[in-house]
Length: 335
Ligand SMILES: O=C(O)[C@H](O)[C@@H](O)[C@H](O)[C@H](O)COP(=O)(O)O
Image 1 (cartoon, rainbow, N blue to C red):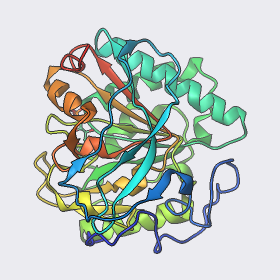
Image 2: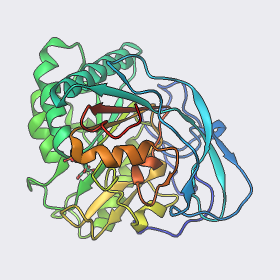
Image 3: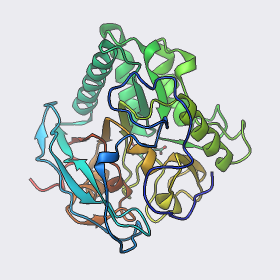
Image 4: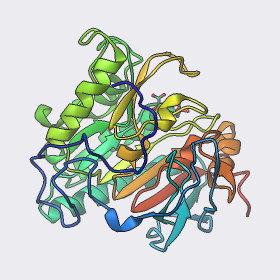
């Protein structure tokens, strides 16, 4: 799917379909499985002026940094999100919850515990939770930790649905594939149901990244729950998340679930990414970052002022938004 120019309000006309998990969850709305209609009360449409991703984003500060896995803050407030060209708007978002940890091992252990708890709880409610995985080094550590703990947890991995927030457009068996990494570190070890694993089509399966994005979007329309139970994201030193890079046209994608990305500053250059609109559809978005190489990007992402164009990670928020950090990644946050 090519990136379209901004067309106004978030939400979707094109994203129609039925999802087989619809109806299992209490807070879905509308007929569209992934994007449309899920959270209308959170979108207040105000008067113009026109905005773009390059305009200053409105105030959004982090919650207090704290340690451990205390429950997320549920306080909500309004922010102008600065994304829609042609129409200003405010969204009601949760205050980000920042959780600090001594080092990467403690961090990964806590995220793994929280994810297992969350999946167990959703399954206990009779749901088939849908989660979004990411790529990168901290994600790989997390996947290995989840696999290590699988035997001691009551999560039924055959009743978890897997998506990816982004994918590198390379052959299916390339070591660069986020899906391959996740399979080798986690999925191959925990008894998933292959019908519940939704990979982004690879470069030896479709001709272009655009075609891949289109097919992935179609899959999400037909198989998606309408939201992720948890969407996990890394952050790059430049502030990117998924494959939404500073200044790239994909930041302005509207009415789309997934889009192609070319000229990615992080190799490989061709990628497919979920859009902000699709990523926002989650009960929880968890950013996970480790190391001082991420400290500046984390500080920019959580600063009261800044732009999504410069720091794309500012542009995603779930019903709950948690920043899982080690001390090094949190080192430039105000104390
Ligand atoms: O496919 C990718 O490259 C990712 O999805 C990307 O967004 C990643 O999560 C961050 O760049 C963090 O990666 P690291 O943990 O390796 O720094």
